[in-house]
Amino acid sequence: MSKTINEYQVELRQGKLWIDGKHEFLKIGKPLRHYGDEEQIEKLIKDLPIIKAKHYRCLELNCYWHHLDPNGDGEIDVSTEPLKKLINAINEYGMFASLSVETYGVGGGQIPQGFWDRYPKSLAMDHEGNLVEDTEYGYMSKVPSLFNSEYLSASRAYIRNLTKALSDCDILWYETTVEPQYMGSRWIDYGPDARSAYENWLKTSEIDGPTFPDTFPVTERFMRDPIWNKFRAQNLAKWVNEDAQAYRDIVGEDAWIATDYLDAIEETMIQRCGDPLEFLRYLTGPNILQVNWTWHNFDRKPHMQAYNRVHQIMKETGRDWAVAEHMTINGTDYHAEDMNGLLENTLKNGTCLGWEFVDVCADLDSPDVKEGVVEPGNFKPAHFTVYDKDWNPIPTMAVVENNWDKWLERVKEVCSQPSA
Image (cartoon, rainbow, N blue to C red; front, side, top):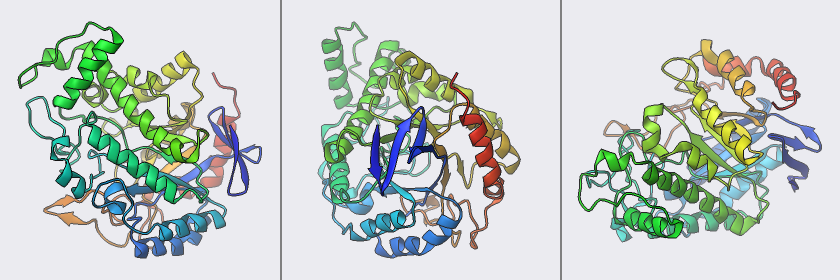
């Protein structure tokens, strides 16, 4: 589909972005900021000439729910004029802006406290009947049940109202919440909302599945049952699809939607999403799939199961997903000597849209810390940044930054080949 963004004719086709009829491989930056804070926004605007000079073409603006809607009712509580000013400034520099949200409680997001004050029973339960906090990533943020109607209603109201407030801005694509999953280190979601949704699914699908347990702890036999995990996978995809539709309700059906696909250590995947192939199979909302893990951080080699599953479903369904990565490189996880292999592997596996770099900022100070834990959504530049205080690339980023023209030649060589 072709449309006009920031006076450019843009099209997503064959897994690539075409700008005025020519394929362009994007250098994508994600500046982690408080986008309800005018001072932080003004600082980013002042940094745009530096970012532009580093060949970034797209900036992803990750708007945490609790920053813009502290009372959690889905209404925007702070002025969005500074954010609109930023988006317009990005466009004026000939770059594109994309809009993303954090509306979950695992992996860095945080639900506004005002929401919990009204709906304390929206918390997810684990298989032992305990209420869930994000113990996997260490943020200790409260985790909502993905089956809870109050949570789904409020979070989607936030997406719609934020999108509506920015509807007169040119935005290239919209992104659903980071790394959609249940949780990889704990078995969730086993509360009453999950039970009700599962029983309705069995009835409407006319599937004969195991009975939802009446008591805790839930048995491992039930937790690993393929029918239960088929349901969990379909529900996870339904969550993403309906969040994608919340954007489209405001900006139209031609809105491009990006979604992360987290495919980590195989032993965790049944906990994260049930059946990962079933999740991808039912993931009909996105146009862009941002894959994570694509590089095994421990073994320091390609982590192929993520790409393999994505390609299997693309072949099965005929979907023309534009493949990219969630955090192709961030400032904490990788080794400089691995970068050539990592980047070559992304191209080999179909990344012709662009590479994403997190965090794009000068490293001026340390993360916010509360009782030894980084507070979700309150990152200061040192947390993930790929630059030092003088905007020099750290060693991993230097492999890209100091050889950008050569990498573009390599991209041109790989992406001009016909698809397998």
